[in-house]
Amino acid sequence: MENTLRIPKGWSITGDAPDDYDVGVDPTLTYENHPCVTIKAKPNPGEFAALAQHIKADAYHGKRLRFSAALRLRDVENRTALFMRVSDANDKMLAFDNMRNRFITGTTDWAHYAIVLDVAEEAEDIIFGFMMSLDGQAWMADVQLEVVEESVPTTDILGEIAAYFPTNLDFEE
Image (cartoon, rainbow, N blue to C red; front, side, top):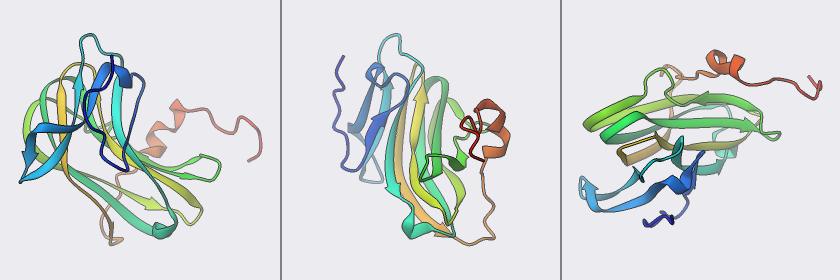
């Protein structure tokens, strides 16, 4: 089945089963008179879909970066979350958070959430966005990407999830 919603400029659909979801600008809902995006499961959806933006890290080297947005959910069975990943030129993760330990489920009104990561000097790419898994519908609005002071704590969970990913398979490190 084809996606029926408009994908906003600069954003792309990703995930394990993007064709199982309608993803894009919701023509029926706004947030504070501004457009919002949605991910809505089609019948019997696969694992998850996401709406993401991929940018170069150059402007943020050595800085702490906060990605924040308002989220709203309706009947989300498994989870909805923001995510952000900072990678080097070899696609090695340098910092990562997908709200693994604080994801949102069920039905909620609009609420703001944030991810804060450090962008290393060797960082090449930053990917950020929001995802939804299995049945339900989620919306995102009021998106901001901003440099914050070092006093703002990071939400980096890379150390917690490191055991889930293979490391140094080419023996270069």
